[in-house]
Length: 217
Image (cartoon, rainbow, N blue to C red; front, side):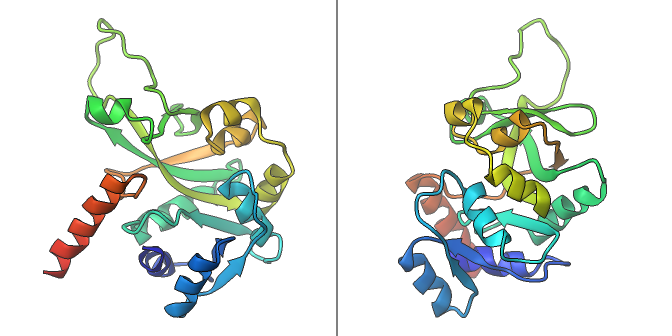
């Protein structure tokens, strides 16, 4: 799975270097086996943000992209779009969102929800269904928006956030992006039609394996 993520990230235009950051020797061995670039990090990080910042602190790049290792079908074009969102000087972090179309997905705590303002800047992220839709609210459109776990950071922002202790909402929801919102950083969201098939559960893994098997056949 990590090899698929690595190669898709490398296929995105403008990406200068792809690194896998891990504290697990098994992951490091798997990356080395396919010739990938891996960096061992300290164990015990509170979140992926903190692990990313440890590596980013040793790199000269002004923009750091975080692609989750459980997104084997991430689209290189989406990576490019998220990076492009940082062209706005006022934006500190960029990420992605897609419409939620079923009540099952809306109620799934593994599907993180996001609400954004009219500029696309995130107002809040939650594992709960947000926003609450009253029966008499009217209006068309999706039930909500799902957060796609892909980020582009300004290096200065990332390193500053790594120096902030996990915040109350971050600890409550177990969502690292809330640390950024609670600290006053702006997160611009890029809308995409659908989320890549990530792997959060054993059922997800079976589904992704079936997708790869059908493509191979």
